[in-house]
Image (cartoon, rainbow, N blue to C red; front, top):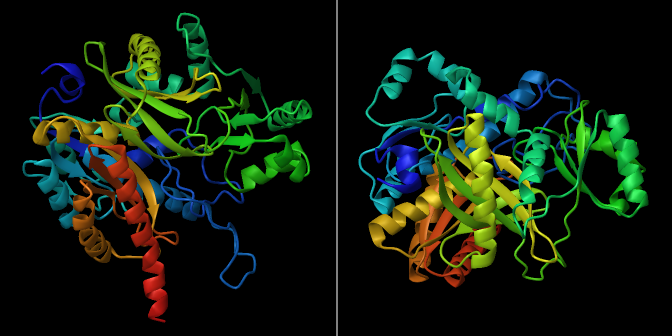
Length: 479
């Protein structure tokens, strides 16, 4: 089998391990500082849900500061929700290893739509820890998974799988200053690509000085921690926002309290790339995905258009015609050049390069991810649907569609099952992906939609959004 599928799976059915939390843990700071608690902001490969108020009780008073153990448990739970995307690591899974409990009905739904063979399900294995911790306590299961006939695919490489060049490459190039240096070295050979300027502040005090100086020159700044996942560690700051916060130092302290930035350590100040007026219909956020095979060869997967709210990823659309040919070709050429450097550094497996566009429609690379991401799942689903139903599919993933009410998995299944025929009448296939977050304080569900036109995808997304919102009115009527 040629191409990225062969490089990724060898043409075999694979075991999918949802180790999102494990991957994130190696880069995120220990949750020990006061105020480091997420309320509605997940620490995952890509965000799951929006923010809610921090640190207030139901009666309006100040809530007690959570302990470090409580903060870590909250972080893990949210990452475990996002690990539901493990259902889409490869076109035809043989087994799924999920940290949270998942009703078998969801897997059966996907198996019918995607023509999967029998799928073993090992779920609920890590409710209070990481997947690595859970598998170390179940050596028979770990050995069974590792010695099967197909590959074992993970969200990303972690230390429990051993040190070596692959992990070293991940540690190096998941750092945003290292990828910026790589982008800068490559961009001179790629017309149509411009790299945003970036400078290092070696302490929060230095970052405050540099941020204030940039604001005085009326410059919007993208503030980044060297490592960050799930939107954590990246904030866009306008001069007006800085002034409203009472200055740079006050704003940085607040961002740490709100867990938008890590406490202490260096920060990166990056030029904000202006893409033009909001709502102008301009192409803005792109991703190029590829797979580096065991032989070090880079195999392109595709280019997709991401939906991003501020710095927070919401989903992606992939398929023919989604990205104009010129922009897609520029992203692919540059992304392949990045992949060759990553391969030389020892990386093997999936990676992506994310871009924003400027007013001249040039592509500005912003980060590389040496792991699976939300868009990777969309590309896999599109390949599978083209394989079993014929070519021409577009796939849109929406990682966190808000629900108007908190629902159990059983109730959520009934709700979506009622909407499936309406989607089908629009020519859209509905695929549930993230189904364990329906009972969170801010309930949400992650879905994929497949069709043969963007108009059908837009119509189905609007239908679902309205139906999810109506859940709240339904429950209010019962009070």
